[in-house]
Image 1 (cartoon, rainbow, N blue to C red):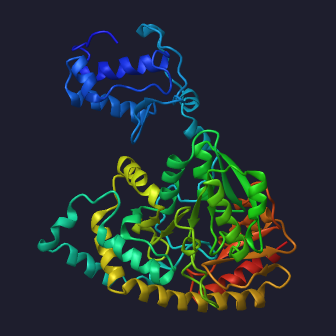
Image 2: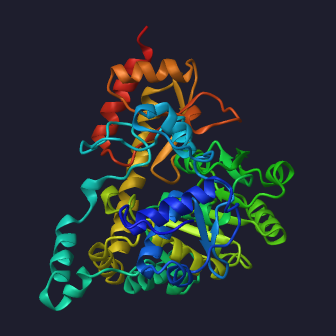
Image 3: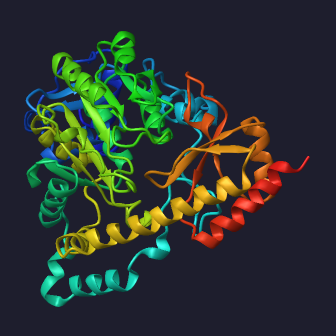
Amino acid sequence: MGSPDPAKGLQRWLYEALRLAIVSGRLPGGSTLPGTRTLARQYSLARGTVAAAYEQLLAEGYLVTRVGSGTRVSAVLPDQLHPAKAADASSVAIETAHTRESRAPWISRLKECDSPFPLADANALPQPFYPHRGDIRLFPVDLWRQLHVRQLRTSRLLTLNDTSPAGLLALRAAIAEHLAIARGVRASPEQIVVVGSVHQALDLCMRLLTGPGDTVWMEDPGYIGARQIMHASGVRVADIPVDHDGMRVLDGIREAPSAALIYVTPTRHAPLGVPLSAERRASLLNWAAASGAIIFEDDYDSEYCFRSRSLPALRSLPGAEAHVVLAGTFNKLMFPSLRLAYVVLPPQLVNPFVRAASVTVRSANGLTQAVLADFLSEGHFDRHVRRTRKIYASRAQAFERAAHAHWQGLIDVQPADAGLDVIGHLLPFDERTAIEKLKSARIDAAPLSRYTHRHTQKPALVLGFAPFNEEEIERAAQQLATALRKG
């Protein structure tokens, strides 16, 4: 690498020398770099200087590190650069956006995604019949404020310090107790990691468990956010069809028998609302045990079953602990800006996941975690869920009555037995025509085709009822019918 150049700055010199050696092939993919202490001694550098250069190369994707195998050159370079060539200032052109994107495939892949989330502030209440949302007006704000104030007492100011990347222990213990009662899941607090969202948990699992060329199963139709994370990861996505019994597991085994990861919403499919049948649950677990694949269970809408008890989590079944990652969120149950969720991990994934979380997101907000821990352990969360479940059940019935009264011959609505939204099959319209008509009446809904990729469904809308009281539902149902019947 030559001798250090103090004029350039020792850290910058070392970073550029290592990067040039990597992109020129002098340090081939997979080769092991010396430890920071060894390299520092060799070039008479401070160990911190070497560590900082390594960290920058790790962040940019030129190096990878794994427990027990040291620091290695990445097998796939982030920009596929050729050896650098000297150039004077007159020959340097301004880099275009297209050039930058071609060197950043993750950005390029994301350009093709239609984000399921607002890309700007979304402070307004949702319009009928916006799906996948609860009613934030039902949240006990005054109680939450009191719990916040209690955590900010002088005697509790340690909650303002950094939190473990695994999450506050008191919160993880409260989550473990809640899961044992509500979902039949037995897990120690040490197997639980607090994250910002289910998407964050899936993203970290994709980074840890998959690599270029790997295959993952995705429900089709299925949750858009999960598909986009897979797409951005660069893996091959096997689209597994869904019917009235949930994901067609045997189709997945036939199409992608060596998949590394399976994403599934077994309690209530997103967005069709059907549960994964007992036979298919057993088949999926048996196959995962035999193949070594990991099942990512998104516990979607499991808290809101109105006419029967919720099915136990897939993670609760015998033999599932070693093969199932269970993820759930508080953001939908309480309020979206809370940004707290959890993941229950197989024992072998706990340490790698916590280390990855510490590098990428550090930790979720410690003060909010402490408040949520009290909210759970003191029974406020259970009372809030029971109260909202009762209210949403009433609104589901009001939605069914309104649909029956006003949408005959327009939309055939499935029974609203669970969750925050339902499927409404369009009778005389295609989805594009229906959406255009509804926009003119300020009615919001999602076309079912937005959730499909390869396996098409009959024209339908995903319609939310939970954020709207009975008067709002009745009024909006009449507006929807009027809009659809206009020539």
